[in-house]
Image (cartoon, helix red, strand yellow):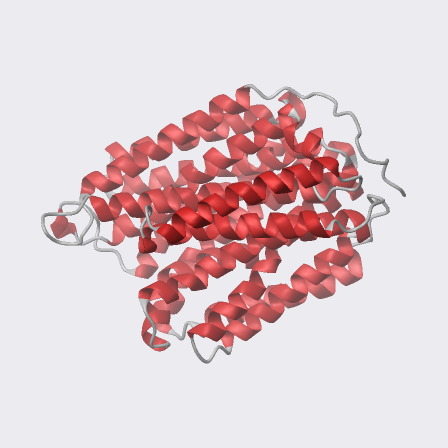
Length: 451
């Protein structure tokens, strides 16, 4: 299921022009096939994670998978762009499966196996995302785009049956009521934030709608913090978020999201560029995906390895080391990209770094929060990474639009160089933040979990 979710998060990138043609729509609305998915995932992930802490993680995992499956099947049968966007919004609820799965691992696995298991699950996310771009190129080049969602539905349906049969319900619960005001304010703040980030390029960063959305997001986040800090049973414990190890982990996650998304989105664009521009390798959509295959394979091994290293030396070091590797790989992409093997080597290094970092982020959260708050804590960490990714994507898009070749709309090589260099700097900053993380006990602010 995790692979399927990651697949569908990245598979739509190469298919966006196809959606526009087949469904007779504009580029802006075709982009909403991805935007709607990301906004929905950002909103539902922490909410379902918290409901899992309260009412059962296995139960909420099945709910998340069910919504994901319904959205995927609906998207495969979409009859126009509006129905496709609507079903993709429904699919976004599947984003909660990762924090819920991490929380189940924390509850059910022996302590000495938790970090390795988290590393393996984190690797699945990275591998799925990488293979999504590879498979999407093949599907878009040879069959209907509807197969993107049909194939993605098969492992989700199998996962529902397997979870129901083999995953036990966690005995650990957070004894509290549903925090409706907190959930509503957080949802509103995230919707406004994600819309301002994803639509800024199209509407204009200085336009009234974008400024209004950004201001509304800031106001709603402030109100949300005030409501949560005064609630007896908050949806998100503000003291938990402000706890230094959790706060620094989320800061590192935000910055790393910026770095990673820029790299992975720009590599296919770079290699598909006509070599007549002075860069690029004339790759097809299928070939462009293959450039990221080393990254996916590397993640498969580096995620569990990060768990082993974290168990021995502490999880902050795989995070710092992973982001340092990402920084070096991004610099290679910025300065040494003349030959295909340069990009392939950098892609493999990116996979090693990402596998280390993703696994370590979740492990650090697990080390520093109560088991009864694992679902919402990892859910918020996932949202932070999404926000960083969207910011990275928008910065990259803005640079590619601003730096062009002559009077054409084709991006100049300097645009790629600048974006990769920014990604390298962001990854280095994330590594430095990671080194400052020190595990500290958190005083309990809510009733102890019941079993």
